[in-house]
Length: 220
Image (tube, rainbow, N blue to C red):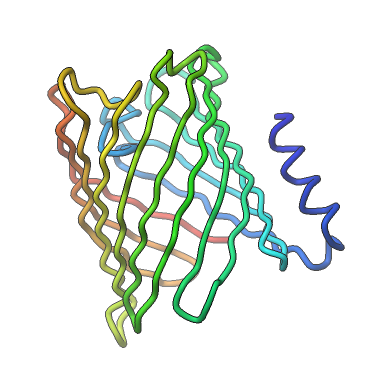
């Protein structure tokens, strides 16, 4: 909680409250998959987030999800800086504290850098996330490299999405070598609602490597 307060304070200190925009969304997913791996034991999960953005590019976000078993939850606190470098290129630098109130030994911090290029109705992103060695990651830490692409189909509410990632370290869940994960799907937006369907998979060890994940969210 102290991290969230610090992030919000940084934005409010930088400029008047009136210059900050508050937004959020809440919804349901049929399976909470993170980097291809189920965190809700292949069960539905309720998720919500709220984001405070300042005109300067500073932002703070609070995100939460149920984990599909007992009353366990995940709560993420993020602070970052996002800026357009040109009409076609933007950058997003952030730090996230992943908190598990029922299992505090699993909490960890991760930094992310993402560059996104836009051309017409398509966008392409390339990013890297790194969790340094800490209590939940051991001595190795964890690195994740990922690429994304979105295509907003002209004159329709449909956006096609694809993502590919490679993870190596404490969280890769592969006995030999790193973990690959992928997402292929789309979303239909009827504001304030979004409906999505995606095929999500990975080469992680275990029997839950692939899933068809449905989602429904309402923005506010």
